[in-house]
Length: 294
Image (tube, rainbow, N blue to C red; front, side, top):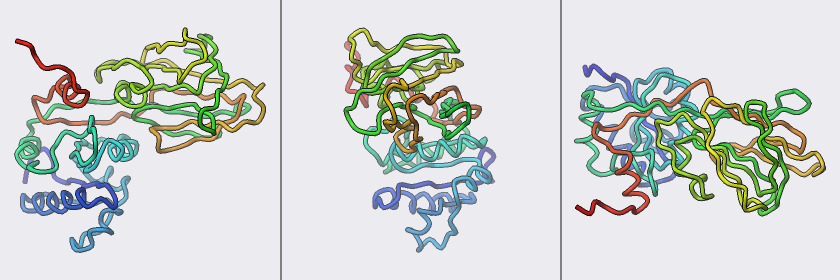
């Protein structure tokens, strides 16, 4: 039996023919190598011909040594928010568009994955953010985010007013469409589209990016990763509904006057890559940066 991993979980992209094809191929190949293979329940229902029972993400986290996510970065984010609570290694097969977090190709993944299974891989620990909404001192809602937590109005293109505090110190007030609070992992996602800087994944830092600020002086700022970020929307906005979006997947309801606390989560994602992978090569490929001149 292989030494590094014994039980492997497969997580897919529901209702995606290409991802299901890759899952079936992975299932057959890993079984032939002697691994115990568990399949996430939504995928198992679609691939009933495999005659494999389905498991929740929490069950995969508890039982697996390795989880393989087949899909795009969105699928990886959804799985990562759960799997990060467990000491399970995670690697991705790209069946999406950009694929900053999914290294392996959907076709011909066997050579690279074989080396990973033999122990030839590098490990990154990506920290998550914990977003919490407090009203009159009571916790109303919370969730975690791999990429970013975003304060924004319930309606599109609607300016809000809010104050920003870092570790209890007032930093500034803003009139903007919202505020993006991003990890280094998320710096190539929503934050980048809003004009934020790219942070390399090894940095212990958080970037705050105002969304379409009313003042041109509202610029992105990078703070220490252990900082506590507090956002308070002006009570003078009345009862206008606000939202705190975590990775664009989970939405927490908020109101003007609520305190939104965003800090580093207690758990991190154990992401593994084929040995020799270069983060800058990924950036060149995904962002179309120039190649070497000489």
